[in-house]
Image (tube, rainbow over the protein chains, first blue to last red):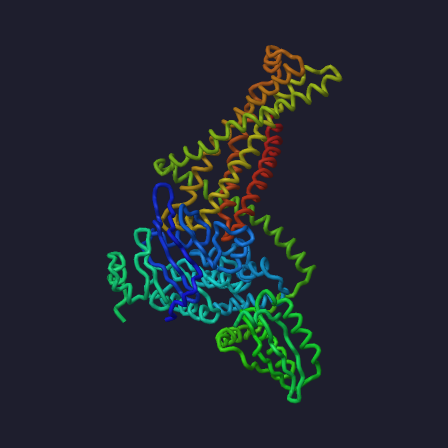
Length: 255
Length: 384
């Protein structure tokens, strides 16, 4: 386990997000430290994905302050906001691959937009990214509609990593994968995090992946972060939902 | 400390010593500098051509490294080695060992062979494909016609199977809500035909025949054609897009696996709504166009409404009206079949949804006009 280095890359303060009369996140505060893998857990519909989408600017917030890599989206210029696109990578729940582009073109897309590279180098790095996430160069010519669920996730990860970002946001990376594939995917995230020195912000339901890869876990309930820490810390947390989650019937037996 | 190093511009420094060449990897080898580094690398490899002694890649001066830089180093090392100059990497900072190791695992299998291009073959291939594609699209049309026919038979055998709610909902969308725009367009068309008629017929004093022109043209041909084209563009396209996105989201597969027939549940109510709506819209459109013609006759041609109506009664017969109205449901059927069958042709991508929607509208309008021509021949030969 990596100890928090104290270097905060994402800082969320007093965040309120709601839709209509329904408040999803209620004065939530959270810090993410450089180089860690943070897992976010919480009930379905409890606002995990909303938190992720608010941090990356897809959902408007009502109140609060969000700093990502020292940039506050409220006060940042358009150029600064655009530059964030280079510094983070996002794996959407359904992959969100561009359906009219091939796998390789999907991975090359951010490179083409942000970097000046020779065609050869861009292609080679894109293939290298595909191979790093466990696909082969031959998969590069396929279209997203021809991929299985697991391959879609891998391609989406390769695209999220295309620019060697500092932060990667993963929205339920292992959902819809069988336990073996999910385990492989966890290991992959771990390896890539170590080799590329990433900070990973991961929303997940999967207790196994929480145990396997996360340095720290933040539990979301009632619109707030009710507990943070390792699996062991959370097992002993006082909040009833967290207790049920980590000690419930579906929780893995104590290691 | 890292900042001090990263201030150095990245470069590849070539020094030749007694024990062979050393390529010094200096500065930040990151994506931003990848293009310049690649160029330097190529010239370094080329300049030392003919050398066969080993090369040391010295990474002691390396600042930051990312996948791009790591791959460039790996590629340099492989190019040198395959050129007969064994290369090895030295003094790589420990924090980058994992990355270098990971990147060195990639590109180990040769890339798949590219299909050779042969333009004449490609061109012939394309012609062949589009020819067979024509037959294929006719087959799709017939398939859907047959499937709808079967669904109609099943519904006739057991009328409670018909989705009345859905059909009424579709009727509201394609019929009722289309009324304002249809009225407006046909009004304008009627007015334009009358204006052109007066303008040209006046030269040889045939003003009265403008009413014949407007009446016969609108009731027999233009009314139904304009309305059918409008409906193909307005409702046909939305049918294709709806069914296409249902196909993409596997909703149609879900229906099928539950034991329902998508043709019966989704397509039949839509086509039924069109077949009912189009004659009504045609009638309304024709009336609106005649009204438009009358307004122009009054304001522009100086023909009083009473005379216009009296002339209209003489000029047109119930036959002209029937010819127009008989065509309407058949055109509706063609539009419905084409738009629904194209919707089911949609594959996974957003692009194919757009493509099929375009194809649907183009094909529906084309077929409507062809059908109109066939009807013209048919009515002429039976003397209507």
